[in-house]
Image: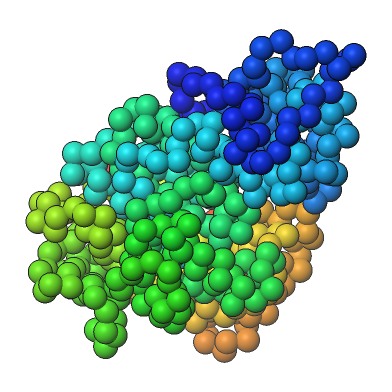
Length: 513
């Protein structure tokens, strides 16, 4: 199959059946207008010619710079069975010699077409989806970990990786395109998966990547400044997130009230929702009370709507980690898992590793070093608060910002960094096609505007930046290294350990990225 985690056994669907579902006719463009011999059978769907295999329906979509129909000939040579496109792409699609389906909005139709081809319209597994600005990836991995502790066979897809029943591949998009998502769900069904956790971005909801999927429970973490390069303002960004809580996409929801947007999501939801919070002064159905924060994890007590309480221990730093764990458990309870079973499954602590999230690169001695993937001011604030809670030494942050992504948040990132840390080192992180100098300048301006007394340094080269941060905090300090723009920062993790070794601190074998 064209997708790395697609079904291993192909099931074909007649092109005519797809055309009937779309309410369009199949356009045949064969020489002499001879009829196509036998029915055209589809065994998959793809938006990329790189993924086309014999029997695949190639979805030729309009793009920002070019139309996908320009590649229909390449798709035909790779064995595509037919093309789905719009009026603008119809001529190029027809020139490929393949049968063509023409609809007004091929992207809008793609999810439902993929569900029909892959047979995923009504999956038997419990489907759980998480949206929000921060905490989505962590919550998905927590969901997967708890489901495995329940004895379930699981599948999950997040910003960092996708897995089905133990087979794992790296992610490219936070949420895969609709054909890949439905191929993933088909593979999960084939493997007898009982629970699936999905990370769902705002862009995925706006761009129809999760169309054709109705999840059993949707979860909302929070909303803060992000993605204003894609959305006009935070209201439009929130509206995209809120669409997950409609009958077309979910059956029930669990909404965190830890950010003001949570109340708006809960109030406007078109499906039944329960609420959860870590704030003792906020009225909610579920409550998370943090009772201990240590270097190696966070302890909390989760109280259900009926007053039943259970202890939760996660090997992750901060109140926000406890909030994500509480949300994961509440979602599973809302999906019908008895709380007594959830308490038993988590009794020894939740065994979870979230790749690239607060990875501990520390040595046996010397300063503690955490390598993280964060990209919003709110994420920085929460992580720095978590670090402060477990150290009495100086705290340094090494940070940068993505190029070609929402420049409006860069100054705020610097302000948060200088407010929460004693040392701020601004480096280059994935500038893409932008000049990295102005990116650094915006962060530096924010950091220097705070007047907190923090030492603010500019060091473009990340390898030198981490070494300057280590020198600035001393052996009893902490360095928080943000690697925005890198999905799984294994190289940064190893470089941090190398820098510690250069300073005479042997690596800890227990450290995991």
